[in-house]
Length: 345
Image (cartoon, rainbow, N blue to C red; front, side, top):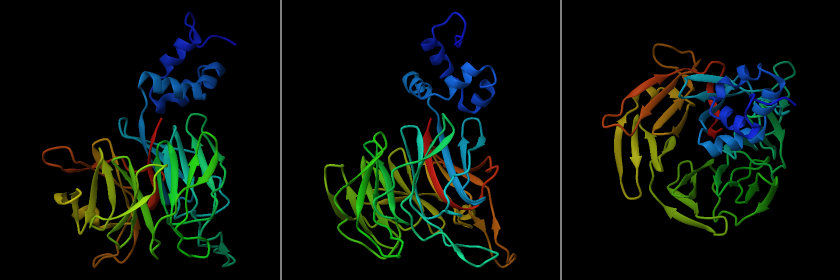
């Protein structure tokens, strides 16, 4: 095998390659087979960790086209399309999406899609599927399934492991069952179940190193401080609406306004009137900014049609006068956002 860079040990050359931005990797792979193998190795990911050259990407899956994910590079303003999720479930939705160890994970969910030709339902409301995408080798892999199928559940990363809690089973029954996935060993273990179940969808956010399970329409929050501990029930009185964590602080969009939500009080940050018009968008924090991605516009008095959008709006919350600005729109995805998370490569 030829050396990566003539005159340099391969270990040193690999660290040099680790500084190259991720979006340029496809071009570098054309140099030689040796470079291609190096750029698609987990050793490169470890080298990027060691030299501090990792990049954060926004990962998005929308209603159109089905089961397709894109990665957004906020520094170079580029959308990267990855291979289609190879699930047999068409129009997979209501799943959990998180990242850890440089990989994207898609867990559970289901589909109520109907075959346009036969009228038959395609798929089921909830599945136990778990998929991981490795951006270095550019490949989806099927992981050990969850112990029960679930949809509309809370899903977070805590201590490098993935926790799923609550949601609904395939028979649309709410459950309290919680479990934890170890990505390194590809194994699931049970943890203490949620103290309460509610007949509403739930989501999870991590604040201060603790997982918070939030149910739609309820002020009650169930909190897990560590994998070895148990759940606590708290009443925070948080506003209802899309949530985003920015530098450890919770922001909520409610009634056309963005609030900074703290434990005992809240502060209005900025108006979100124009962004509010988009239904089914995703709101997520990255760096010191809030991204509102995709969704559909309409109908309204002037237009009865529903228009899927690829728009991306960004709010820099750390500035003295936060102002919205438009980022590069998604190049392939559009419409209701089904999954959104941050991936560090």
